[in-house]
Length: 303
Image 1 (cartoon, rainbow, N blue to C red):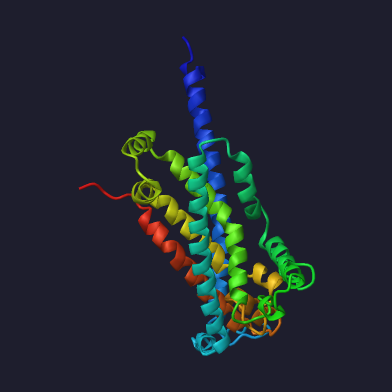
Image 2 (cartoon, rainbow, N blue to C red):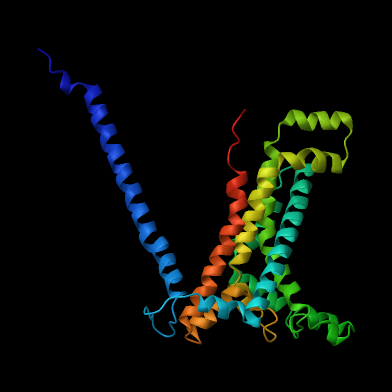
């Protein structure tokens, strides 16, 4: 008699079972690591924010005094205002410029790989490099101010980085410069995914640019707009290295942001609990920024 257990089908079943076990083990290990190092770290920081800890954790009393201190600080409120301005400016500027560039590339209808790489180059650099580049651009001696001064432009009009009323515009401009490439790539993908029959119908109707890309393509591009807004917002909420390199939070605290405030409280002033409270507020803001994407990306149930 032939042993049926030695045929190819049982061996395939055994291999499939082994692969499923290995995949389950890898996923379980990844979930355990995420639970321990990410969720556990967040929980620890949240716990510290409820204590009077300074240099070292003190777990004897708990309360919300640190949050009262935090929102009673004029500097913290000022950093939130700066962050709101930075996020709003980078979202509007990056999304608007990115969509405009994507439209230009789509209308060109030619091989635009070199142009795409050129606009994506800032995205490939870190915020530290972006800060160094823009710091050089606005250097009083060798940057744009020095060039314009040689052309006779008054000096006070050139000190944009050292003026409290203009410094955040420079920081936001640097953020827009870096994030525009990401938005352009997303919108380029979205425009190419629209049914070619729609573009042909628009060509036959003689639709203008606003009709093509505003009234027709705009609603079809909704998922890509949501992704771009969420990505740029999440990046803006983490603003730290760009501000530190470009302005150092100055002049004074004119360009200070929450991340810089939190790092300074923990590392320089040894106020561990206040820094942890600020970090928890930043986490809440990040979750609030990604919540609309999570809700709008859910598939709608058909009636």
